[in-house]
Image (cartoon, rainbow, N blue to C red; front, top):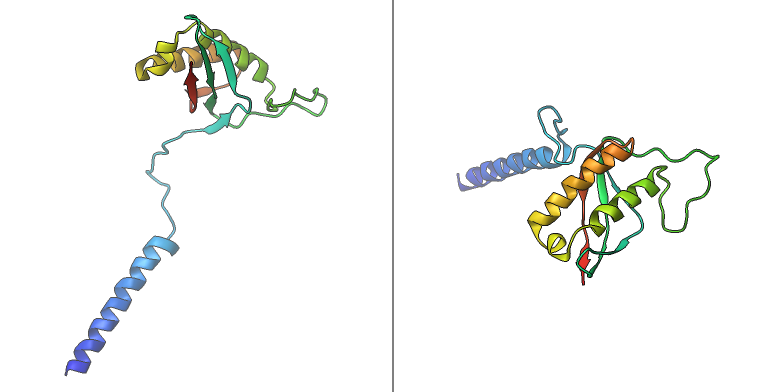
Length: 146
């Protein structure tokens, strides 16, 4: 009888383990009802910014945008972008907006969470006014203020 109990326990563990492996690895994931945390495409501007701030300090930072769809590259007739720039046709306008908005801010605004959030909202609004991009969010992944 002990052999029979051991066999039942081994079979039970094997079945439970097999079902767990199927659930974790092989079972298809259901996309129905799941809300994506990032709704769109994240585009990171390839070249960092170095900007003089309104209070005499300077900031070095990178910028990313959550776009409704991936930016279309400039056609084959377009000039080659400068080194470090991406192929997004509106990148120069985006960089101009970012430089203007962040340059008018202070180091305190960039180093505080609330200040950065206000700047990101302002950047998003200005980018939607001046470009054809559908910007869902603006991200400042790396910020250094000196």
